[in-house]
Image (cartoon, rainbow, N blue to C red; front, side, top):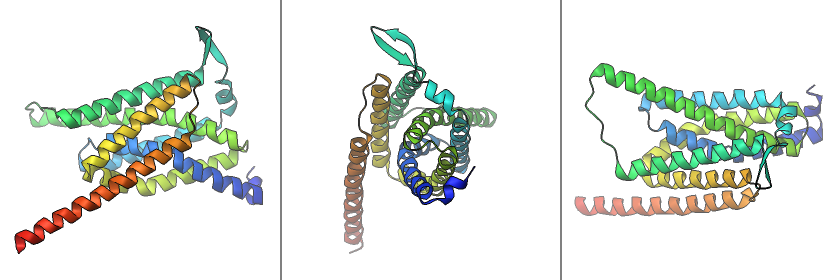
Length: 251
């Protein structure tokens, strides 16, 4: 079954697909990092690990039902002459969820929120409910991103073992970096706001795909990388300005 992995073509396909899966997983990492950031620090790692574990299980499970996934491209109903398949419905729902969730997070960061006075028992119950709700959101968005990821993999190779190994390798890479990404995003509020803006853009991208309007993802990821590079320069500039102020105070 895994003999194809030992061939030169199989190794090239594995490396290419793994790299692509890592790139496609960037938006997943951003979402998980931001949504887990609402939890206490000691629970953030647990939530992110659950999110990545869910992503692994979901994507591998989808590989065993590739025939069903391919069948999702068949129209289920038509509206104003436009056919909508199971894939389109999933992308539309996922896009709306990302836009709505990211917008509400931005609103909360700008406006803030008042926390009611709660006793210890109520706080513990509220914290547990928040953890459960965040895990549910992480699992749901993983389902959406997993469909997109697996459909992309199918377009590159029809070898299930190669797809399975590439998914596992890409998720191991994400697991190694997600906690560092989480810490970095939470440390820099402007980066978190930029990341939320990215998620809104990804949400619109999913919506467009749901309505049969394909947008080359290379443009999206390039704009994300360019904006992030500019923000890194701004962070360095602010650090230097802060250091100069500290030196001036000490002098």
